[in-house]
Length: 228
Image (cartoon, rainbow, N blue to C red):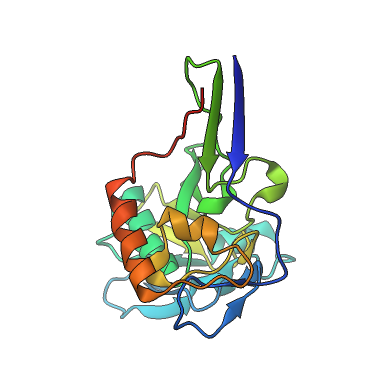
């Protein structure tokens, strides 16, 4: 059986246009996350009001600090965020407003605290399809090689003692994106935009955006194209 995969990621142009005719900014294929504003607590004391921080500024910061200090300096999520699903949903909502979405790459229960690595959805390599046809071709908006992966990542933790989720003030990870455009919030997650907006100089009208959005919702589960 011969199975081939075709990434919808086309050769990287110098610039790309966000798929909205009203958008003036031209985004490059390499960009930095900014203003990922979240509400956190500086301690477990619920009596102290929360603060707002830019999550992006914690990623890869103070890399020369000793690990013991990195582990000790924490920002705690609100007590209402009780599970990993809650954490991912909260952070993903912030990321979608900034032009991309995240997925869980890995989970680990080893060590003192449980942790989960969250990455840009363009940072997970597409899996080869399974099928009985002699020739199977699939299209995907995810990268198909490690070289095409977007490096953006965040690590979140669950404290075993308190059961509260947190991030490190001086966290690992990366706030950089590469190989894809920054989209408008209403375009994030719509497959046509994630592939077609990478064409240099292409703009879509409001009517095209509306049609593509409705069509994508109807066909969201049809992610594989089979060619016999």
